[in-house]
Amino acid sequence: MESLLPPATDIVKSLGPRASPRAYLNVLDAAYGAIDDGDELFSKFMNTFQNDGEKSSSYLQRLQVALSKAVRGGGIKSSEGNHHLLRQFCRGCWDDILISELRLETRRDDPIDFQDLLRSLRTREDKSAQKWLRMRSHSSASKQKPQPSLRSAHAYSQDAAISSKLPHESKLLSETAELKKQIAELKEQLTSLTLPKSRKTVKPKHKTSPSPSTPEFIAKPPFKSTGGPVTKSRPRPGYCFRCGEDGHISVTCENSPNPG
Image (cartoon, rainbow, N blue to C red):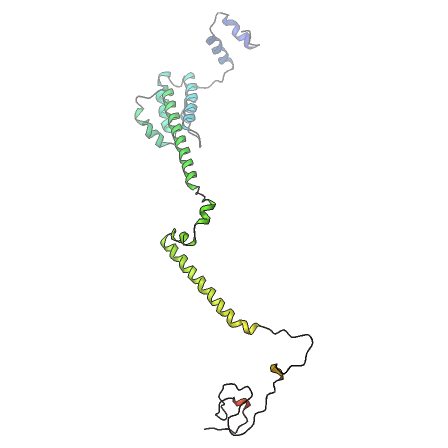
């Protein structure tokens, strides 16, 4: 009474100092509490369903609060509370596997208390959480690949690396290595063939008179028409299609033509 202020003090003065605390609370609840009809409270209880992402244990606690309001409002008898609680939980919980594991559908005629049902739900949720953590740690450990040491990486030769792979992979690698080897050989041959043509002679800045030993100083004598084979100071092998002789070609031939 000393902790109340008017007008609440005026309401409870009629009870006197010898009244029980429950009597004071009933009077204050009648004066200031929310007035709800018992049928409306029971209807709200029957329309309470599990939300998305809500645990089953949290949903059961929310049901218990709504059930307590309906019992206080007179919408449900106190003796029928466990029966309606289990029935609405099986109706509004979306986890059918949980309901099947705990066999709640078969216990409607003999419902369990709120405390026992809540303990069963929390135990099952704890087991599921621990299992999920073990699965996550196992999957993360399997994704990590072992890193080879630096010494072992240098110790392995190319043949050992190829032999450690699958048969079809090793065959593919060997064929690739053979092709690379053949391509390298072809490049070397092509380089050796094209190298003399690509060379360029370096010309001196100042011309000097050719010496007798240089090829430019050697004079080429003219071809003479003697009827016999024409030879040069530096004969070249060839066949003449004009006179039929060897040692020159038809462009430089001065002999008479020989059609036969």
